[in-house]
Figure 1 (cartoon, helix red, strand yellow):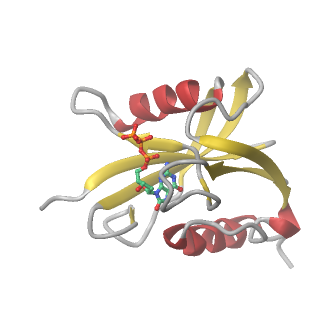
Figure 2 (figure 1 turned 30 degrees about the vertical axis):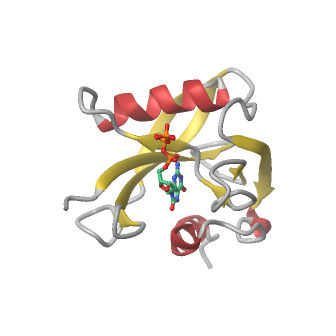
Length: 140
Ligand SMILES: Nc1nc2c([nH]c(=O)n2[C@H]2C[C@H](O)[C@@H](COP(=O)(O)OP(=O)(O)OP(=O)(O)O)O2)c(=O)[nH]1
């Protein structure tokens, strides 16, 4: 079966010079509760990935965002999460609103750059966080 496409955002304080990254702790389902992820969700049949991402961020966090570059992954440009799911991820910055854990999260945390790895991310997200750290590492 074709994997289901999930879209998500690496929301940072400043797209030009990311220092803080927004991590969201899942409250549901029980199997994922307590683990941290990038806010986002599944693309519905009638919407584009970018439309789906804006919808999910509005529903889950109550924010509008500006999207930056896509964080290209090793699986045809995406990130395979499991047998069932594949994810596309974009850098993003908040355009309006203050993020709140409205739906499937019970906590949000702005992680400073040196601590992006310091929460228990969902297993599939660990290598993605490593890639983000690699992209923002100070040159030299
Ligand atoms: N949103 C999101 N989902 C992730 C990440 N990493 C990861 O393995 N997943 C998995 C968890 C879920 O099994 C799956 C689908 O995500 P989801 O549950 O957020 O999708 P959704 O909001 O559309 O959920 P629903 O309305 O159908 O309940 O992707 C991530 O960083 N962000």
